[in-house]
Image 1 (cartoon, one colour):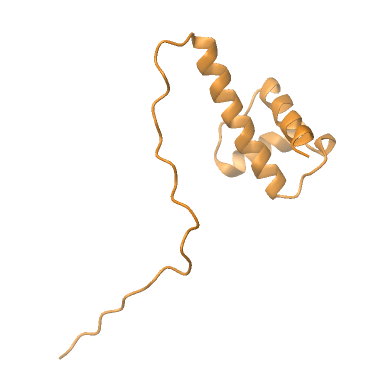
Image 2 (cartoon, rainbow, N blue to C red; image 1 turned 60 degrees about the horizontal axis):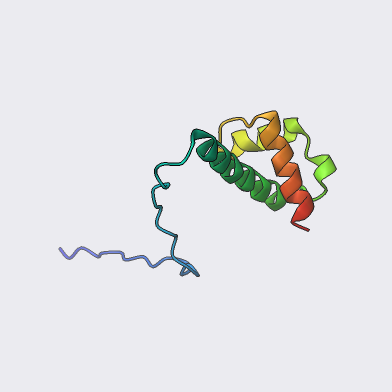
Length: 93
C-alpha cells in the first residue's frame, strides 16, 4: 500500500532574517547593564502598547503597562521603566 506524504510550505516568506544575538560587551560598569536592559524592556513594552492601540502616553498608566508586560511575558516593570515607556510613546510620534 502506498503512503502519501504531505509536504507543507510556509504561508509566507519572512521579509528579513532575525538578527543573531551577540553577548554584551564585557568590562562595563554594572549601571550600564542595568540601564541597557531597562531601555530594551521599555522598547518592547512601548511597541506592544502601540500595536494594541495605545497611542497617547496619558492613557498608558503603570497598571496598563504592567498588564501588557504580563501579556507579552516580560517581568513587571518598575515605575522608572514605566516612565521610560511613556517617554518612548511620546517622542516616537
